[in-house]
Length: 342
Image 1 (cartoon, rainbow, N blue to C red):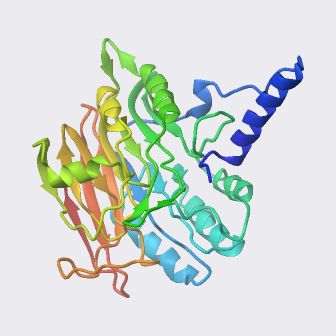
Image 2: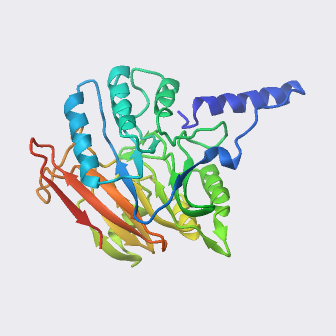
């Protein structure tokens, strides 16, 4: 099955029909660059909190998980933006999914949602899910276009009329190609790269791109290169725990493009117990901390059952950022500790 979204398939079929029939009616209007953008006001130490792999489902103890999320947000302190990086639900229904996003909306924090490989196929339509996540202080965008995926958009963090930082959401797709060896996840597409490149150009001032971060769900193939470090491009490594790595099955070329366009960090989820983070060829690559115990697993004794919580990025006015992992254990007393990067 293609990872084109349904409405984009319909656009392609309509355009083909118009061409074949010789019809003179206009085709549907495609998105403009501004259709992908939202804006937030910058201040020094602007905080972006990443939730990932919540996996709320029909068996979830909703009240317990709400309390857990409250503790994570409390640990983070004042948050300016929340990025929720996929696999938000699994085997879920409308009641549980509504409870999750209503609770997130109750924080009154601007929030961005992107999709993982389990967010479809629940007990509701994708159009219903999209309408739910567009409520409250949602930053989610999914305009009519022919770019693969449903969560490709960006948030400008503005200092007056200047884009101080940009935060990208990228849909890393849900289609899984199985092989005799492993699950294989498709890389970012050529059209996604073209979309990203065009959008990044507007941030270029005097030959320099605005610093930016990228959030997605499936790790890029380059994470394996960072772990192996066969090319010697890794300069710093922290949070070395890896249960397994399930990146896209081949390089997409996006990493090199992102570095050229001012990206300072790329963050994802997907592999649950992993918290590996490293500087690779001048860009920080890292797993977010899995948020909550739903579908949580850890096989190694290297870390105890305390690797749940969230990741926190603090943006600086000089174009740098600080990264912290918030480990909030799922216990009655919420044993909590914070580890800083570098």
